Image (cartoon, rainbow over all chains, first blue to last red; front, side, top):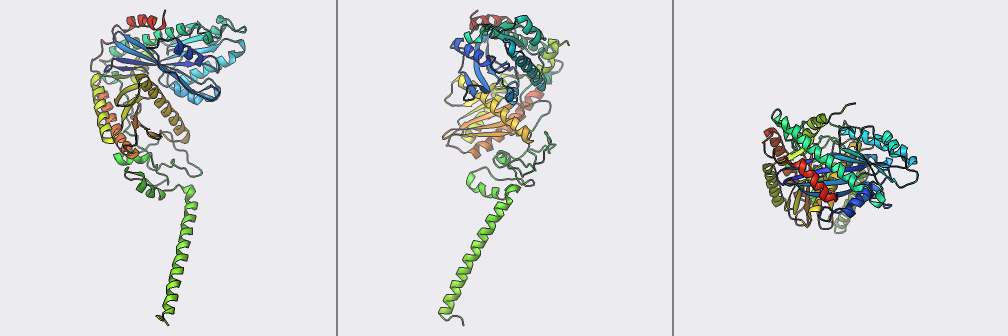
Length: 332
Length: 177
Protein backbone atom coordinates (compact mmCIF):
# COMPACT_ATOMS: atom_id res chain seq x y z
CA UNK A 1 0.00 0.00 0.00
CA UNK A 2 1.08 3.54 -0.61
CA UNK A 3 2.75 4.95 2.44
CA UNK A 4 2.38 8.68 2.92
CA UNK A 5 4.75 10.23 5.40
CA UNK A 6 3.92 13.86 5.97
CA UNK A 7 6.75 14.19 8.48
CA UNK A 8 9.41 13.53 5.85
CA UNK A 9 7.16 14.70 3.02
CA UNK A 10 7.56 11.37 1.35
CA UNK A 11 5.39 8.94 -0.58
CA UNK A 12 6.39 5.34 -1.19
CA UNK A 13 4.73 3.06 -3.71
CA UNK A 14 5.25 -0.58 -4.52
CA UNK A 15 5.28 -1.80 -8.11
CA UNK A 16 5.53 -5.47 -9.04
CA UNK A 17 6.52 -7.00 -12.38
CA UNK A 18 4.46 -10.15 -12.79
CA UNK A 19 4.30 -12.78 -15.52
CA UNK A 20 5.26 -16.29 -16.56
CA UNK A 21 8.78 -17.66 -16.23
CA UNK A 22 11.36 -16.29 -18.69
CA UNK A 23 9.01 -13.59 -19.97
CA UNK A 24 11.52 -10.85 -19.20
CA UNK A 25 10.51 -9.39 -15.84
CA UNK A 26 14.02 -9.26 -14.45
CA UNK A 27 15.28 -8.00 -17.80
CA UNK A 28 12.80 -5.12 -17.56
CA UNK A 29 14.17 -4.23 -14.16
CA UNK A 30 17.76 -4.53 -15.35
CA UNK A 31 17.04 -2.10 -18.16
CA UNK A 32 15.46 0.36 -15.73
CA UNK A 33 18.49 0.00 -13.51
CA UNK A 34 20.90 0.52 -16.37
CA UNK A 35 19.22 3.50 -17.93
CA UNK A 36 17.61 5.40 -15.06
CA UNK A 37 19.39 8.58 -14.03
CA UNK A 38 22.09 7.70 -11.45
CA UNK A 39 20.60 10.08 -8.93
CA UNK A 40 17.26 8.30 -9.08
CA UNK A 41 18.13 4.67 -8.82
CA UNK A 42 19.34 2.45 -6.04
CA UNK A 43 21.10 -0.88 -6.21
CA UNK A 44 19.39 -3.74 -8.00
CA UNK A 45 19.14 -6.52 -5.44
CA UNK A 46 18.34 -9.97 -6.62
CA UNK A 47 17.46 -13.03 -4.59
CA UNK A 48 18.13 -15.55 -7.30
CA UNK A 49 19.20 -19.16 -7.70
CA UNK A 50 22.68 -20.02 -8.87
CA UNK A 51 21.27 -20.36 -12.34
CA UNK A 52 20.16 -16.74 -12.17
CA UNK A 53 16.47 -17.55 -11.97
CA UNK A 54 14.63 -15.32 -9.55
CA UNK A 55 14.05 -17.20 -6.31
CA UNK A 56 12.21 -14.68 -4.17
CA UNK A 57 12.30 -11.29 -5.82
CA UNK A 58 14.45 -8.68 -7.50
CA UNK A 59 14.25 -5.28 -5.94
CA UNK A 60 15.24 -1.80 -6.92
CA UNK A 61 14.33 1.53 -5.35
CA UNK A 62 13.60 4.30 -7.85
CA UNK A 63 13.48 7.86 -6.61
CA UNK A 64 11.29 10.10 -8.73
CA UNK A 65 12.44 13.17 -6.84
CA UNK A 66 10.18 15.91 -5.60
CA UNK A 67 6.66 16.03 -6.93
CA UNK A 68 4.86 19.11 -5.66
CA UNK A 69 7.27 19.22 -2.75
CA UNK A 70 6.81 15.57 -1.86
CA UNK A 71 9.63 13.11 -2.28
CA UNK A 72 8.22 10.26 -4.31
CA UNK A 73 9.81 6.83 -4.26
CA UNK A 74 8.91 3.73 -6.18
CA UNK A 75 10.03 0.34 -5.09
CA UNK A 76 10.21 -2.00 -8.02
CA UNK A 77 9.93 -5.75 -7.47
CA UNK A 78 9.82 -8.73 -9.76
CA UNK A 79 8.38 -12.11 -8.81
CA UNK A 80 9.74 -15.53 -9.67
CA UNK A 81 7.85 -16.69 -12.74
CA UNK A 82 8.05 -20.44 -12.31
CA UNK A 83 4.83 -22.11 -11.23
CA UNK A 84 6.73 -23.84 -8.43
CA UNK A 85 7.40 -20.59 -6.59
CA UNK A 86 3.83 -19.46 -6.12
CA UNK A 87 4.10 -19.06 -2.37
CA UNK A 88 6.93 -16.55 -2.65
CA UNK A 89 5.26 -14.88 -5.61
CA UNK A 90 2.18 -14.28 -3.52
CA UNK A 91 4.24 -12.75 -0.72
CA UNK A 92 5.77 -10.17 -3.02
CA UNK A 93 2.30 -9.03 -4.03
CA UNK A 94 1.46 -7.97 -0.50
CA UNK A 95 0.64 -4.28 -0.41
CA UNK A 96 1.22 -3.81 -4.14
CA UNK A 97 0.21 -0.48 -5.64
CA UNK A 98 0.66 -1.27 -9.30
CA UNK A 99 1.44 -4.25 -11.52
CA UNK A 100 3.25 -4.60 -14.84
CA UNK A 101 2.22 -7.89 -16.36
CA UNK A 102 5.04 -8.97 -18.66
CA UNK A 103 3.67 -11.39 -21.25
CA UNK A 104 5.81 -13.46 -23.59
CA UNK A 105 4.47 -12.77 -27.09
CA UNK A 106 5.50 -16.12 -28.58
CA UNK A 107 2.58 -18.26 -29.69
CA UNK A 108 3.88 -21.32 -27.83
CA UNK A 109 3.86 -19.37 -24.56
CA UNK A 110 0.25 -18.28 -24.65
CA UNK A 111 -0.92 -20.96 -22.23
CA UNK A 112 1.74 -19.96 -19.73
CA UNK A 113 0.71 -16.33 -20.08
CA UNK A 114 -2.92 -17.15 -19.44
CA UNK A 115 -1.98 -19.31 -16.48
CA UNK A 116 0.17 -16.52 -15.01
CA UNK A 117 -2.65 -13.99 -15.43
CA UNK A 118 -5.03 -16.37 -13.68
CA UNK A 119 -2.48 -16.83 -10.96
CA UNK A 120 -2.18 -13.06 -10.57
CA UNK A 121 -5.94 -12.80 -10.30
CA UNK A 122 -6.05 -15.55 -7.65
CA UNK A 123 -3.18 -14.13 -5.62
CA UNK A 124 -4.59 -10.60 -5.69
CA UNK A 125 -7.89 -11.98 -4.55
CA UNK A 126 -6.23 -13.35 -1.43
CA UNK A 127 -5.31 -9.79 -0.53
CA UNK A 128 -8.82 -8.59 -1.31
CA UNK A 129 -7.76 -6.92 -4.57
CA UNK A 130 -8.67 -7.55 -8.18
CA UNK A 131 -7.34 -6.97 -11.66
CA UNK A 132 -9.98 -4.38 -12.46
CA UNK A 133 -9.30 -2.04 -9.59
CA UNK A 134 -5.53 -2.19 -9.29
CA UNK A 135 -3.37 0.00 -11.54
CA UNK A 136 -2.06 -2.48 -14.13
CA UNK A 137 -0.24 -2.35 -17.46
CA UNK A 138 0.12 -5.35 -19.76
CA UNK A 139 3.43 -5.46 -21.61
CA UNK A 140 3.71 -7.68 -24.70
CA UNK A 141 7.38 -8.52 -24.59
CA UNK A 142 9.66 -10.24 -27.11
CA UNK A 143 7.98 -8.56 -30.05
CA UNK A 144 11.07 -9.21 -32.18
CA UNK A 145 10.69 -12.98 -32.16
CA UNK A 146 9.36 -14.64 -35.32
CA UNK A 147 6.61 -16.59 -33.57
CA UNK A 148 5.19 -13.55 -31.79
CA UNK A 149 1.41 -13.42 -31.84
CA UNK A 150 -0.32 -10.23 -32.93
CA UNK A 151 -1.11 -7.67 -30.26
CA UNK A 152 -4.82 -8.04 -30.98
CA UNK A 153 -4.73 -11.75 -30.26
CA UNK A 154 -2.72 -11.24 -27.10
CA UNK A 155 -4.98 -8.46 -25.99
CA UNK A 156 -8.03 -10.60 -26.47
CA UNK A 157 -6.62 -13.48 -24.45
CA UNK A 158 -4.78 -11.64 -21.71
CA UNK A 159 -6.46 -8.34 -21.22
CA UNK A 160 -10.17 -8.71 -20.58
CA UNK A 161 -9.90 -5.89 -18.06
CA UNK A 162 -8.94 -3.46 -20.80
CA UNK A 163 -5.71 -2.30 -19.18
CA UNK A 164 -3.29 -0.17 -21.21
CA UNK A 165 -0.87 -2.34 -23.21
CA UNK A 166 2.66 -1.74 -24.43
CA UNK A 167 4.89 -3.57 -26.89
CA UNK A 168 8.43 -4.23 -25.81
CA UNK A 169 11.70 -5.94 -26.56
CA UNK A 170 13.11 -5.82 -23.06
CA UNK A 171 16.39 -7.41 -24.13
CA UNK A 172 17.18 -4.28 -26.15
CA UNK A 173 15.44 -1.95 -23.73
CA UNK A 174 12.69 -1.06 -26.17
CA UNK A 175 9.35 -0.28 -24.54
CA UNK A 176 10.60 -0.70 -20.99
CA UNK A 177 10.45 2.93 -19.93
CA UNK A 178 7.13 3.75 -21.62
CA UNK A 179 5.61 0.80 -19.73
CA UNK A 180 6.97 1.93 -16.39
CA UNK A 181 6.10 5.54 -17.03
CA UNK A 182 2.50 4.65 -17.83
CA UNK A 183 2.22 2.54 -14.71
CA UNK A 184 3.83 5.20 -12.51
CA UNK A 185 1.33 7.64 -13.87
CA UNK A 186 -1.59 5.31 -13.04
CA UNK A 187 -0.26 4.71 -9.54
CA UNK A 188 0.23 8.41 -8.82
CA UNK A 189 -3.24 9.11 -10.15
CA UNK A 190 -4.64 6.52 -7.82
CA UNK A 191 -2.95 8.22 -4.86
CA UNK A 192 -4.59 11.48 -5.69
CA UNK A 193 -7.90 9.87 -6.47
CA UNK A 194 -7.82 8.09 -3.18
CA UNK A 195 -6.76 11.18 -1.38
CA UNK A 196 -9.81 13.00 -2.69
CA UNK A 197 -12.10 10.11 -1.83
CA UNK A 198 -10.40 9.52 1.50
CA UNK A 199 -10.36 13.13 2.59
CA UNK A 200 -13.93 13.68 1.51
CA UNK A 201 -15.17 10.98 3.76
CA UNK A 202 -12.64 11.75 6.45
CA UNK A 203 -14.97 14.11 8.19
CA UNK A 204 -17.70 11.52 8.22
CA UNK A 205 -15.49 8.75 9.53
CA UNK A 206 -12.49 10.39 11.09
CA UNK A 207 -11.30 7.32 12.89
CA UNK A 208 -10.72 5.52 9.64
CA UNK A 209 -9.10 8.30 7.67
CA UNK A 210 -5.61 8.04 9.03
CA UNK A 211 -5.16 4.35 8.96
CA UNK A 212 -2.19 3.78 11.14
CA UNK A 213 -0.01 0.70 11.15
CA UNK A 214 -0.53 -1.85 13.77
CA UNK A 215 -3.98 -0.52 14.27
CA UNK A 216 -6.27 -2.50 12.09
CA UNK A 217 -9.82 -3.20 13.01
CA UNK A 218 -8.82 -6.05 15.25
CA UNK A 219 -6.24 -4.59 17.52
CA UNK A 220 -3.73 -7.06 18.82
CA UNK A 221 -1.63 -6.59 21.88
CA UNK A 222 2.01 -6.35 21.11
CA UNK A 223 3.85 -8.52 20.90
CA UNK A 224 1.13 -10.82 19.84
CA UNK A 225 0.34 -13.05 22.79
CA UNK A 226 1.45 -16.53 22.14
CA UNK A 227 -0.91 -19.29 23.13
CA UNK A 228 0.48 -20.71 26.32
CA UNK A 229 0.38 -24.37 25.44
CA UNK A 230 2.29 -23.92 22.23
CA UNK A 231 3.88 -27.09 21.02
CA UNK A 232 5.78 -25.69 18.11
CA UNK A 233 9.31 -25.13 19.33
CA UNK A 234 10.33 -28.71 18.78
CA UNK A 235 7.26 -30.65 18.05
CA UNK A 236 6.43 -34.12 19.24
CA UNK A 237 5.98 -36.63 16.48
CA UNK A 238 2.31 -36.34 15.54
CA UNK A 239 1.64 -32.69 15.83
CA UNK A 240 -1.91 -31.54 16.39
CA UNK A 241 -2.90 -28.91 13.88
CA UNK A 242 -3.98 -25.86 15.69
CA UNK A 243 -6.49 -23.41 14.27
CA UNK A 244 -4.89 -20.57 12.33
CA UNK A 245 -5.98 -17.97 14.85
CA UNK A 246 -6.13 -19.63 18.23
CA UNK A 247 -8.51 -18.03 20.64
CA UNK A 248 -5.75 -17.41 23.10
CA UNK A 249 -6.44 -15.27 26.11
CA UNK A 250 -5.53 -11.72 25.18
CA UNK A 251 -3.01 -11.27 27.91
CA UNK A 252 0.01 -9.12 27.59
CA UNK A 253 3.11 -10.92 28.62
CA UNK A 254 5.51 -9.19 30.92
CA UNK A 255 8.32 -7.71 28.90
CA UNK A 256 10.94 -10.18 29.99
CA UNK A 257 9.06 -13.30 29.18
CA UNK A 258 7.72 -11.85 25.96
CA UNK A 259 11.21 -11.05 24.87
CA UNK A 260 12.47 -14.49 25.56
CA UNK A 261 9.46 -16.33 24.37
CA UNK A 262 10.85 -16.67 20.90
CA UNK A 263 14.22 -17.77 22.17
CA UNK A 264 12.85 -20.69 24.04
CA UNK A 265 9.37 -21.45 23.03
CA UNK A 266 7.37 -23.55 25.46
CA UNK A 267 7.91 -27.02 24.21
CA UNK A 268 6.47 -29.58 26.52
CA UNK A 269 2.94 -28.94 25.48
CA UNK A 270 1.85 -27.79 28.90
CA UNK A 271 4.79 -25.92 30.28
CA UNK A 272 5.60 -22.31 29.82
CA UNK A 273 9.11 -21.05 30.12
CA UNK A 274 9.64 -17.95 32.17
CA UNK A 275 13.18 -16.93 32.65
CA UNK A 276 15.08 -13.69 32.71
CA UNK A 277 16.54 -12.61 29.42
CA UNK A 278 19.94 -11.77 30.79
CA UNK A 279 22.44 -14.16 29.41
CA UNK A 280 22.42 -17.49 27.79
CA UNK A 281 24.50 -19.43 30.29
CA UNK A 282 22.18 -19.87 33.28
CA UNK A 283 19.25 -19.86 30.95
CA UNK A 284 20.19 -23.11 29.37
CA UNK A 285 19.45 -25.16 32.45
CA UNK A 286 15.72 -24.51 32.74
CA UNK A 287 15.42 -25.35 29.08
CA UNK A 288 16.61 -28.86 29.84
CA UNK A 289 13.52 -29.26 31.97
CA UNK A 290 11.26 -28.66 29.04
CA UNK A 291 12.71 -30.98 26.46
CA UNK A 292 10.30 -31.95 23.77
CA UNK A 293 8.32 -35.10 24.26
CA UNK A 294 10.00 -36.86 21.40
CA UNK A 295 13.39 -36.61 23.08
CA UNK A 296 12.40 -37.73 26.53
CA UNK A 297 13.77 -41.25 26.01
CA UNK A 298 17.19 -39.94 25.15
CA UNK A 299 17.18 -37.80 28.22
CA UNK A 300 16.10 -40.66 30.46
CA UNK A 301 18.83 -42.84 29.06
CA UNK A 302 21.33 -40.12 29.88
CA UNK A 303 19.96 -39.83 33.40
CA UNK A 304 20.11 -43.59 33.88
CA UNK A 305 23.72 -43.84 32.76
CA UNK A 306 24.83 -40.99 35.03
CA UNK A 307 22.97 -42.62 37.93
CA UNK A 308 24.79 -45.89 37.27
CA UNK A 309 28.11 -44.06 37.28
CA UNK A 310 27.26 -42.59 40.66
CA UNK A 311 26.35 -46.00 42.07
CA UNK A 312 29.64 -47.49 40.86
CA UNK A 313 31.70 -44.56 42.21
CA UNK A 314 29.98 -44.64 45.61
CA UNK A 315 30.35 -48.42 45.84
CA UNK A 316 34.08 -48.11 45.16
CA UNK A 317 34.47 -45.35 47.78
CA UNK A 318 32.46 -47.26 50.36
CA UNK A 319 34.42 -50.42 49.61
CA UNK A 320 37.74 -48.59 49.93
CA UNK A 321 36.60 -47.08 53.24
CA UNK A 322 35.52 -50.46 54.58
CA UNK A 323 38.82 -52.02 53.44
CA UNK A 324 40.88 -49.33 55.16
CA UNK A 325 38.79 -49.59 58.34
CA UNK A 326 39.31 -53.36 58.36
CA UNK A 327 43.02 -52.95 57.61
CA UNK A 328 43.53 -50.64 60.60
CA UNK A 329 41.39 -52.84 62.81
CA UNK A 330 38.76 -50.25 63.30
CA UNK A 331 36.11 -52.81 62.72
CA UNK A 332 36.03 -56.41 63.58
CA UNK B 1 -18.50 -6.88 -14.16
CA UNK B 2 -18.23 -3.21 -13.31
CA UNK B 3 -15.47 -2.20 -10.94
CA UNK B 4 -15.68 1.51 -10.44
CA UNK B 5 -12.48 3.03 -9.21
CA UNK B 6 -14.34 4.92 -6.49
CA UNK B 7 -15.19 1.69 -4.82
CA UNK B 8 -11.51 0.73 -4.75
CA UNK B 9 -10.23 3.98 -3.42
CA UNK B 10 -12.85 4.58 -0.78
CA UNK B 11 -12.99 1.17 0.74
CA UNK B 12 -9.79 -0.71 0.20
CA UNK B 13 -7.09 1.88 0.16
CA UNK B 14 -8.15 4.09 2.99
CA UNK B 15 -8.32 1.27 5.44
CA UNK B 16 -4.99 -0.14 4.52
CA UNK B 17 -2.94 2.83 3.40
CA UNK B 18 -0.45 4.14 5.89
CA UNK B 19 -0.47 7.83 6.66
CA UNK B 20 1.93 9.38 9.14
CA UNK B 21 1.99 12.93 10.41
CA UNK B 22 4.88 14.84 11.85
CA UNK B 23 3.85 14.41 15.46
CA UNK B 24 3.37 10.66 14.94
CA UNK B 25 6.89 10.30 13.63
CA UNK B 26 8.28 12.44 16.46
CA UNK B 27 6.69 10.17 19.03
CA UNK B 28 7.84 7.04 17.24
CA UNK B 29 11.37 8.44 16.97
CA UNK B 30 11.50 9.28 20.64
CA UNK B 31 10.39 5.73 21.52
CA UNK B 32 13.09 4.35 19.24
CA UNK B 33 15.76 6.61 20.74
CA UNK B 34 14.85 5.48 24.22
CA UNK B 35 14.98 1.88 23.06
CA UNK B 36 18.41 2.37 21.49
CA UNK B 37 19.91 3.95 24.58
CA UNK B 38 18.51 1.29 26.90
CA UNK B 39 19.39 -1.69 24.76
CA UNK B 40 22.71 -0.19 23.63
CA UNK B 41 21.92 -1.05 20.02
CA UNK B 42 23.31 0.84 17.05
CA UNK B 43 20.32 1.51 14.86
CA UNK B 44 16.61 0.84 14.66
CA UNK B 45 14.45 0.87 11.55
CA UNK B 46 10.67 0.77 11.64
CA UNK B 47 9.46 -0.84 8.44
CA UNK B 48 5.94 -1.63 7.28
CA UNK B 49 5.14 -5.12 6.07
CA UNK B 50 5.04 -3.92 2.47
CA UNK B 51 8.73 -3.10 2.71
CA UNK B 52 8.52 0.69 3.09
CA UNK B 53 10.65 2.39 5.70
CA UNK B 54 8.61 4.44 8.16
CA UNK B 55 11.38 5.95 10.22
CA UNK B 56 14.87 5.20 11.48
CA UNK B 57 17.00 6.15 14.44
CA UNK B 58 20.59 5.59 15.42
CA UNK B 59 23.69 5.44 13.34
CA UNK B 60 24.60 2.71 10.94
CA UNK B 61 26.90 2.74 7.99
CA UNK B 62 24.15 2.73 5.39
CA UNK B 63 23.19 5.03 2.54
CA UNK B 64 19.59 5.94 1.92
CA UNK B 65 19.25 3.35 -0.82
CA UNK B 66 20.82 0.73 1.44
CA UNK B 67 18.12 1.49 3.96
CA UNK B 68 15.43 1.13 1.28
CA UNK B 69 16.86 -2.21 0.24
CA UNK B 70 17.20 -3.43 3.82
CA UNK B 71 13.57 -2.44 4.43
CA UNK B 72 12.41 -4.46 1.43
CA UNK B 73 14.47 -7.46 2.49
CA UNK B 74 13.29 -7.25 6.09
CA UNK B 75 9.69 -7.31 4.91
CA UNK B 76 10.54 -10.20 2.57
CA UNK B 77 12.11 -12.14 5.42
CA UNK B 78 9.11 -11.63 7.59
CA UNK B 79 6.71 -12.54 4.82
CA UNK B 80 8.60 -15.78 4.22
CA UNK B 81 8.63 -16.74 7.90
CA UNK B 82 4.96 -15.89 8.18
CA UNK B 83 4.24 -18.35 5.40
CA UNK B 84 6.36 -20.97 7.17
CA UNK B 85 4.44 -20.26 10.38
CA UNK B 86 1.16 -20.69 8.58
CA UNK B 87 2.23 -24.05 7.19
CA UNK B 88 3.36 -25.15 10.64
CA UNK B 89 0.04 -24.10 12.15
CA UNK B 90 1.52 -21.16 14.05
CA UNK B 91 -0.20 -17.82 13.72
CA UNK B 92 2.95 -15.82 13.17
CA UNK B 93 6.57 -15.87 14.26
CA UNK B 94 6.90 -12.58 16.06
CA UNK B 95 10.67 -12.29 16.11
CA UNK B 96 13.60 -13.18 13.90
CA UNK B 97 17.29 -13.06 14.63
CA UNK B 98 20.16 -12.88 12.17
CA UNK B 99 23.52 -13.48 13.73
CA UNK B 100 26.70 -12.20 12.20
CA UNK B 101 30.31 -12.34 13.31
CA UNK B 102 30.16 -8.85 14.70
CA UNK B 103 26.85 -7.27 13.75
CA UNK B 104 23.47 -8.81 14.34
CA UNK B 105 19.97 -8.02 13.23
CA UNK B 106 16.92 -8.60 15.36
CA UNK B 107 13.45 -8.24 13.82
CA UNK B 108 10.40 -7.85 16.03
CA UNK B 109 6.82 -7.61 14.93
CA UNK B 110 5.06 -4.44 16.06
CA UNK B 111 1.29 -4.68 15.97
CA UNK B 112 0.10 -6.29 12.78
CA UNK B 113 1.60 -4.11 10.13
CA UNK B 114 5.06 -2.99 11.12
CA UNK B 115 8.40 -4.55 11.91
CA UNK B 116 11.13 -3.18 14.14
CA UNK B 117 14.58 -4.02 12.77
CA UNK B 118 17.42 -3.53 15.24
CA UNK B 119 21.08 -3.53 14.31
CA UNK B 120 23.44 -4.25 17.19
CA UNK B 121 26.98 -5.42 17.77
CA UNK B 122 28.83 -7.23 20.53
CA UNK B 123 28.63 -4.26 22.89
CA UNK B 124 25.23 -5.55 23.98
CA UNK B 125 23.49 -8.91 24.14
CA UNK B 126 20.63 -10.49 22.29
CA UNK B 127 18.75 -10.81 25.56
CA UNK B 128 18.93 -7.09 26.25
CA UNK B 129 17.85 -6.28 22.73
CA UNK B 130 14.95 -8.69 22.85
CA UNK B 131 13.81 -7.46 26.22
CA UNK B 132 13.77 -3.81 25.25
CA UNK B 133 12.52 -4.48 21.72
CA UNK B 134 9.46 -6.19 23.16
CA UNK B 135 8.93 -3.21 25.42
CA UNK B 136 9.34 -0.77 22.52
CA UNK B 137 6.97 -2.84 20.40
CA UNK B 138 4.36 -2.59 23.11
CA UNK B 139 4.77 1.15 23.38
CA UNK B 140 4.62 1.61 19.62
CA UNK B 141 1.50 -0.49 19.34
CA UNK B 142 -0.27 1.57 21.93
CA UNK B 143 0.97 4.69 20.16
CA UNK B 144 -0.52 3.46 16.89
CA UNK B 145 -3.76 2.77 18.70
CA UNK B 146 -3.81 6.32 19.98
CA UNK B 147 -3.13 7.69 16.52
CA UNK B 148 -6.05 5.73 15.19
CA UNK B 149 -8.48 6.77 17.88
CA UNK B 150 -7.46 10.40 17.52
CA UNK B 151 -8.53 10.25 13.88
CA UNK B 152 -7.87 12.78 11.14
CA UNK B 153 -5.95 15.82 12.30
CA UNK B 154 -6.56 17.78 9.16
CA UNK B 155 -2.84 18.19 8.59
CA UNK B 156 -1.52 17.51 5.19
CA UNK B 157 -4.85 17.88 3.49
CA UNK B 158 -3.39 20.40 1.09
CA UNK B 159 -0.03 18.75 0.84
CA UNK B 160 -1.12 16.60 -2.06
CA UNK B 161 -3.09 19.34 -3.78
CA UNK B 162 -0.77 19.86 -6.75
CA UNK B 163 0.53 16.35 -6.77
CA UNK B 164 -1.19 15.06 -9.88
CA UNK B 165 -0.20 17.92 -12.16
CA UNK B 166 3.35 17.93 -10.92
CA UNK B 167 3.59 14.15 -11.30
CA UNK B 168 3.29 14.18 -15.09
CA UNK B 169 6.17 16.60 -15.50
CA UNK B 170 8.41 14.70 -13.12
CA UNK B 171 7.77 11.41 -14.90
CA UNK B 172 8.90 13.05 -18.16
CA UNK B 173 12.10 14.17 -16.45
CA UNK B 174 12.93 10.84 -14.92
CA UNK B 175 12.02 8.70 -17.88
CA UNK B 176 13.42 11.14 -20.42
CA UNK B 177 10.37 11.63 -22.59
